[in-house]
Length: 541
Image (cartoon, rainbow, N blue to C red; front, side, top):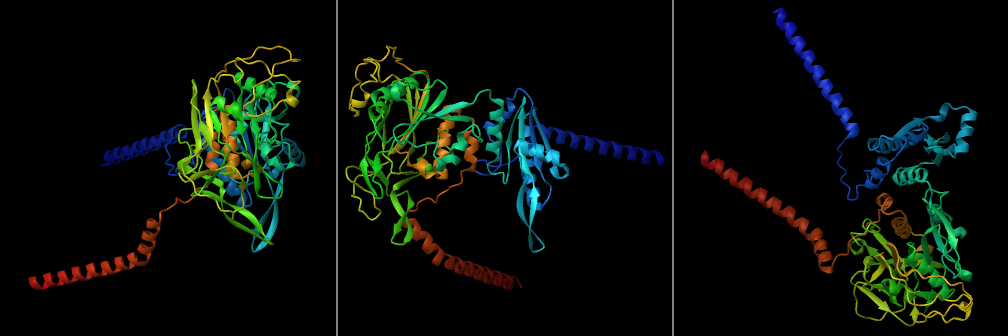
């Protein structure tokens, strides 16, 4: 009997040890290979493939130090959420060293060192026992690599944390930042304007972006600087000269990327009257494969609201000239738009794709099938009637990829001396160079990309959907697909799908009458079943 007890006890211990060993092994493997179901459509609670690629390809240790206070509860919750995100980063890379530090016990010298790093002590309002108090806390993250260090000074939420972390890791691990140049000298969108400092910080290397931002002037025959990777031509108000167009053309022929945001009209100051705008870019862009419509678009089905002043009142009302692109009308294949939910383009023109050899063209965004063009006199007041015309879906943004032919192939280099007197219409031809140093024209580009959009007004409005679209475009042209999928996790505009009148009436009467009929039908069915059961029981008795 004693031997049986000893044997049984030994078997039990062995069984428990085996179970514990299996649990330890499963726990270890789960930190390296784990499965988790994220049922959201855009997988917003799972780090993106781009992040996995970035952290998985690190060639040396990246140190991430989270300086978070453990109290009060509001900060502790954010700290826990940040830890969850960083745990996912750690699971996909052996090159990350992640530490959490509570600076509550730091002395003055250590706190001063944190301030020099760029992580300040911040004050937050805390409600305790029905009383509001102010607490001093830390909520910052430091990312270091090979002697370089960048910080996220204040992390108040994790909604955009993945983009900020991954972009900062790219920033400290990239040897040289890319340069994005904004064309100036023709009334374009001014990235240096004080009103757009927040926008600049998204691109500038001193913010959380990946780029040096610079202005590009082509006056006096200057070429685009060789350090510029992507050139932005946004909102030209005065026509470009042939020499300036030539320098842009040669920049593209050298493999440069370009974004053309071309306004079709110019608004008269203080009014809602518009006049056609000549930029001199039409023939150049048509040669590359995107023809500007020289018109204005409205969308009778999908459009946004605009704010108008009526006497002393400010009202919002639907405005068909603010064309709204919804998800079914974005390109599902292209990385710039395949995760966008909506995009409002104010006062935009249509685009037409022109087939070109060795060029792949993609319509990034289109109006609904109820799009309509207008030309001529532009009275853009919301109460001004719009004439009826044939409706169809019109492209409003086009991406071109491939090896482009130079617009100036077989032509002479335009002269700088005659630029001021040259008639810069779309049909003009370049004048011969007179006082310009002879230089060979590069006639075919390397593999490169161009994006053309029929308006630049969305940049000035600083709407989140427009900013996301523009940044996606810059990222695709400059970095490829690296950051686009991450940023798109934060895009949450999901407009309701338009329902037909029949569907609306069906739902309305279903709610008013259908529910009552369902209750009555349920009661009748139950009554007859009970009556049948009663008869069956009586017959059996």
